[in-house]
Image (tube, rainbow, N blue to C red):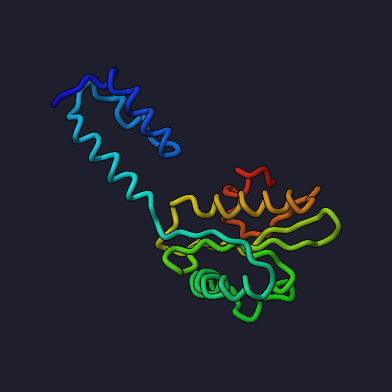
Length: 173
């Protein structure tokens, strides 16, 4: 069955709203399409969106334990940062944001309180095969939001010079 997509848009948008969003722009380029093909696509898209991704905040050494393997992989293994400097005295006093995929930490970052109203985010790492999926942006935004929730008036960041353009997108200079 072929259907005029203009008349199908109401049904399509209604289905998207029921799923919490979607990509209506994907069908705007065509005037007609097979209705069953579109419905099959939407079903596959919905199932694809069901992942084993979890995001969580952990305070102190519990969070550090989950973030440590990825941080060592990225900072020590890839970027050749000295292993003895990667962890510091803040680990047990830091909020650690952990993104896991099927139980494996694939992105992380930490937030430390420097002074009343002053927080610092850093140690942001994303597993190499997961880069380009906006996980770094998710981690950074989550760290900023957490700092604000904790009463931050000033948010500082520590990062490497190659990452400056990335952090500038969040208002850091």
